[in-house]
Image (cartoon, rainbow over all chains, first blue to last red; front, side, top):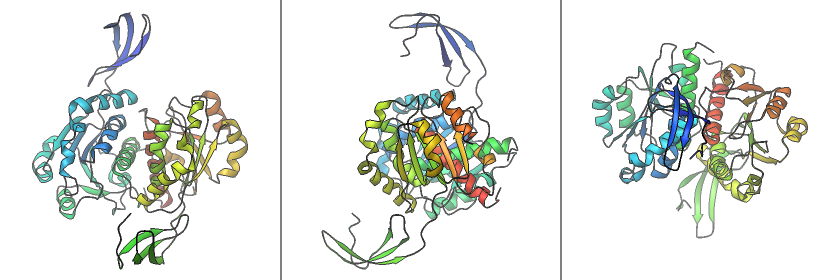
Length: 219
Length: 219
């Protein structure tokens, strides 16, 4: 892809392993020989995402952006306002989303491939599966009605965050109650309603900035 | 579009004016009569954006998102790493971008149509035109090399912000120096490199959250 020539250095990374530099020793049409020097493995992103499955077109656009912003885990779930046929799309095939996730990782120079899981039963996910799927010590649910900011929820001691983002029309009351009963704190980033892909990027960006600043006791 | 029937209430808004509610009096194939009640005009978004023109496909995706997140003004500029032919696209025609901006405003329930201007000469924009185009009292340039957060730059007294975001390959040294010489402070949101549309959404979200929290002396 890169049309490398011998002697040329290229940036490399091993999935879930270290970043490094490779110097091209030889290259032909089918293979490239590299002499590799590895550096540190990047830190695992501190955010897990629980996302009500958006429509396929939106989900396709999101994969690379999620990996670039940094999520350790992506749990895609059903919800009352998610249409059932969204689960039939090939955008949920690993063969489709893995290259998109890798594209996002390359952009951000990370190697941690987000772990993806798909959950057709919201209640079972929250009641039975979540405790083992995420080891976050702080869970938040994006709620436009909430005035609390991720910045007030995240404490200097917070290590990992689980963020739940609902479908285009929002979680219904049962879903929101269930999340709250499991310790999810409602957070928002202001009164403007955003499209679900914009909301994901916006909330993840604010979350990471809060973790970066609170972690260093910065502001 | 909404297939309204008499008696039905619909949310309405006048561009650059108030939001309100309209009750349908009569509707046929070509017209709808509404009895309108107007409420307050939303506050003008506190962020102006100076953006190196991204490639047309990316710019098209951005319009609605910019309006939804809230920008008062969008100045699209040339830069060394912007390809000249990007300026020839119809994505810069008001006939194309205005409906996309309106879509974003509807989503966010705002009425302030961002003022759009296109600048083919970066230097002239920064040296001669910027002072009259934006009345921001704080100017920032997104710089991946900067560790300063928008949260540390924005003060409780900050009223309006001008944010400059460079092209996919970054501003060159001359451009960055010129911006700094005009008072732009370098800010970043962490070490990950983001695609320019993701970066726009992420930075605008963090900026608005910083304005929201700092303004209320919140965190």
